[in-house]
Length: 194
Image (cartoon, rainbow, N blue to C red; front, side, top):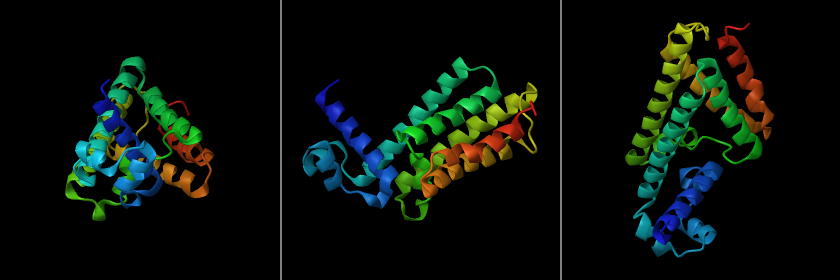
């Protein structure tokens, strides 16, 4: 990997960490320069503005999520197990603090103040995730693996909101276990193995 790509990736990784810690307005290029060990003009060389940086970050975040969920579908056939694995991923990330919060969920809470270019990317992530969850829910219902109380689309939106809310509660209580405490009843309700 070239130094240019490596530096840009380091900048993006740092911005991701800073956004999770403090939101869109919780960091500056000076903060990134200090952490990455470069000068502010070097950041501008890779990302002309903070808008460009965060827009790129969210776009890549969505691409990573798409790749991860595609791999999940290839490796786990059962829709109920796909949901459990998806939740398990977040539970592990929250527990070991590698990704204690979804970047897009955090940025969604800031939509009124986000630049439109960033807001569009955040909304695209939500649409993608809701669509994937709805397809899993629909497949699970057809296969008799999931019990839905309403349409797959409504269940998917509720599932996504519960996962994001559980992240928020785990953060608010300073207790990673809170995530699982909130999510387990949802998985049990959806499960046909009552």
